[in-house]
Image 1 (cartoon, rainbow, N blue to C red):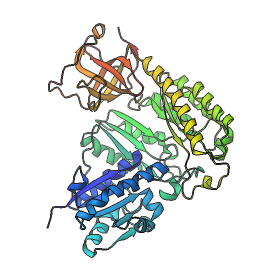
Image 2 (spheres, rainbow, N blue to C red):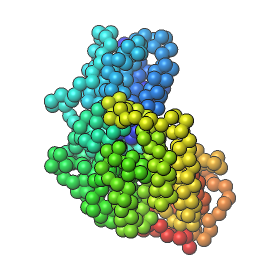
Image 3 (cartoon, one colour):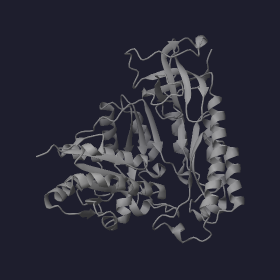
Image 4 (cartoon, helix red, strand yellow):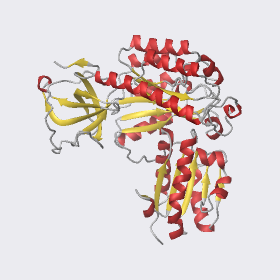
Length: 475
């Protein structure tokens, strides 16, 4: 019998990355070795996202590229899971005749059994049914595979907000929260496997535990903050309507909680926010931002924006640009609106032409790039505490550098040649000399600011003030 090998391709968001880790663990326990290339595998699993049309297009493009592998070896099992699988179900088998298995978002725990059925019966199978009674509801079990310095932990699934553009309630289901004891157990296991930072994931982490009457999200953060060996805590995504005073206060109360919040605004027009069913006004959003910045100067605030939502006039769009100029986010994720199956906005009239959506997106991104660059350059000369994640993958100077993030989620590439604060130089970096900084908190002087990252130099005789990385000017 040939050795069993699985290749897992992830398309989409952080939650999909987390689910792909679970898929890898499940299949490893079933005797599969995880490989880095599809042509090495006899099981290929594509884990998908349906939030935007572009991600769905990527899926079908990838499946087309995988077709020759099935032709060369018909016994190779090709499976698609995640949100698109949940959304499309059996229709995927008709659209992709060489696809063997379609499994939904609640079928992860059944995946090894489904794969065995495909292999033994040579059948094509669809399973988009709900989680069965007694299935583990994301309990990590006895083992967590190493995932690096920074790892994801899903604390809740689904969503009850029903924003009119969003497919999540239809493919991930209604909102459910994991028990806090289970979450803490998983985080401890991930710390034992090498994690020094965790990002808590949910469609709306602010409402964690409300339905089940568990602890509040702020209380959960308090428990996570007590986990030994953990250096930093992040979370995403927060809904502005549910951003409580208790959660805002947690940024000052919890030492390990990073000074960064991702707070999707989606539009600067109250009319469009109402059509999106976001349940807050721009004034409400701006008040929350002002409170965060008043209490924690220097906190990084990032956001999401959708351009070209049905009915968005030029005036509405200009309100969004004015909002960006006024709030000055640290960075933005911006997207062109696209109809998603089952979402209410698919029935809305006044659809914006594709060319106009593209124009608005480029104008918005251009404005935000200018703001981001200004903010990054303003950090030149400050000292920042960086959690080192490893070597930099790319470098404008082609030098070998370390890479990590500040508490405010800024990517910093820096040289491995510690120098005093008064000796920051522009000379060439030395290659690493065996001193592994991965997973360590390092103080770095920022020398240059770019659109997407910062360049710095590590500092000797410069103690770390706290995990939060309080900014100060270099001496």
